[in-house]
Image (cartoon, rainbow over all chains, first blue to last red):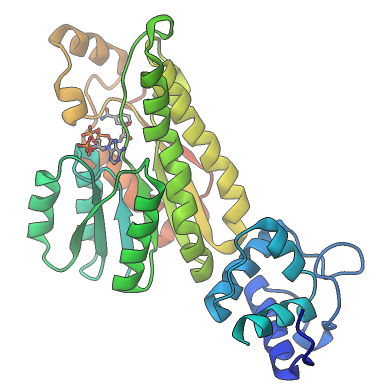
Length: 90
Length: 241
Ligand SMILES: NC(=O)c1ccc[n+]([C@@H]2O[C@H](COP(=O)([O-])OP(=O)(O)OC[C@H]3O[C@@H](n4cnc5c(N)ncnc54)[C@H](OP(=O)(O)O)[C@@H]3O)[C@@H](O)[C@H]2O)c1
């Protein structure tokens, strides 16, 4: 994981991407950085949402999550996604 | 602009489907997937310069699929419609069916559709739009004697279609299957006269279908009007079933 602090712009950008790609009813500003995307207390995403996120991260950041394990790790929260994107472009 | 990929496009049905899309709009770009034979597809492409393109695509070969999608994306930046039309049969009684006739027919008709869908989905998901039309067969529903391999493969295509349709419905992608009956193409041309007569007797309309009559349904399923149709299995058989 990246030890650099996560850029707030990147976090905001990813939240916007999440809302737009998945047509979420939750406004981007109400998504917490470390809020789980899946499961209890989370945003309530499912496997089809995950599929769309994998494609969106590749399309927008060139981040390729080819195996399910890698995808699971990155698609934990907006912060985890930001860390993976930052690491990729570092 | 809409971009189409049709597999098995040198065949009778594939050419008719390609022609339907080429006639539909001047802005349509149509990719014709061919394998061993290409002369008829080349002749068709020559009628529509700059709008019809040949691509070598053995549908059982996953790397060929990936290369095809890359080529199309480089050319147009998008892919709107995939028609999985390539297919073949190799009939025999199961008791005496060579295992290669089983595996070969499954690979060309069913595995191919899996590879094709998987190859185009990242593009279609990224677009949040796409249409997939799978050409199955009435044999999927009739399961005739002598076609255990082909019927199983095409029934598999129907099930794959319905399953995938549910997975991607929310993303704006529709997936539908067609089940043609007897259609007048090269595939039927080799039929012995007495088999032809027997086959005609099975068809309430007392005639075989024309490739254009199947192509019209494909064009409709790929059109904006068909936006709410997904997971459908449309038989086009003159009333056999
Ligand atoms: N005609 C009918 O009565 C009828 C009825 C029901 C369903 N269908 C289905 O309709 C589709 C089109 O059939 P058609 O009537 O147009 O038959 P066709 O004239 O024999 O054309 C079939 C095409 O599929 C291609 N193909 C076969 N295996 C391939 C592979 N591994 N990779 C790439 N291309 C491959 C053939 O190419 P090559 O020349 O390289 O072999 C050919 O161009 C098929 O899926 C067929 O099962 C037809």
